Length: 338
Image (cartoon, rainbow, N blue to C red; front, side, top):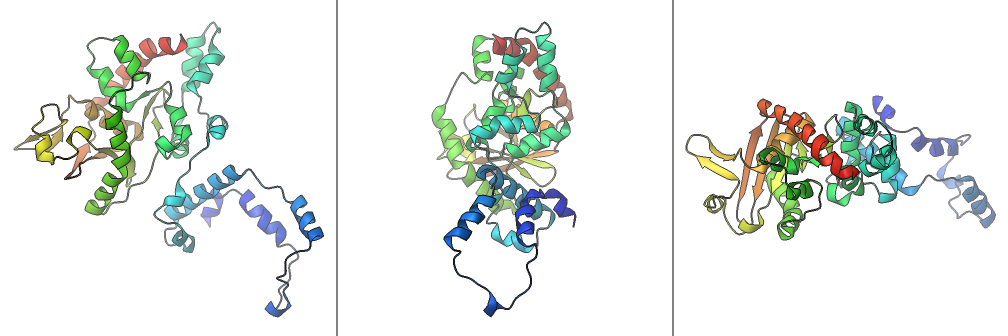
């Protein structure tokens, strides 16, 4: 079957070697006793196991592919709520994985190109990624906050959560630069609340819609320095973005709408929608464009209410990507180098 092409041959190697010259036998003639010390020592000396974390990642990758391609296969019954399908890389492997999928670490790349006569051209050339690399990076950075590879991938890059701040800025200020570089930490309590209750919101979304949410990582633009991390993928054409407003955690959505600073608005003709002037609008459009999807399920969760909006891709927004690329080259890159 084609699925075998997705599974590294090394996973089958040890089993196939052990089965050579093994003849069928009756159960009563089989020896189930513990091996003698000499035999055990000899067997242990002949086994050269791969590094444990790599093996775990391989198995999870294979399970994910089997579940996606053969959902009725018997092995899928051992996978509980896709919990075993998350590929999360330990920090010690981040650098090697980046090399395998041609995913440069920005800080490392800057160190390498410093002093070169054409360092700027070299930097942006090495940051570029292919479509294949984009998909592999999104897979390798699943788990997001719990995955150090995801954290490494975002460092030194302009991400969708900051797109709106750049696009709405009348001028470039030190505060804006600090924000996009991640040096400015704001609303820590609100961020912690959102992270803690994100799973609650996704559970409510799934229960309400009957749709499955697939975990995902960071998606890069081909330039390699713009990125977006949706809270999930739904089907083949949607991303998922969850908001758990801390200041309105005990309110209904109707109560939230009374706050002029709230990011949703309501009209008699179109109902609820995101304010196009708000940062979240640009975040959602950035996610849709960078993942190549068509819609975003925008979920607002409070302890008392749930709101689900289906936001369509705005093709006119694509022009903003060039503005963001120029901002990075003109303002972020000089700060990173210095």
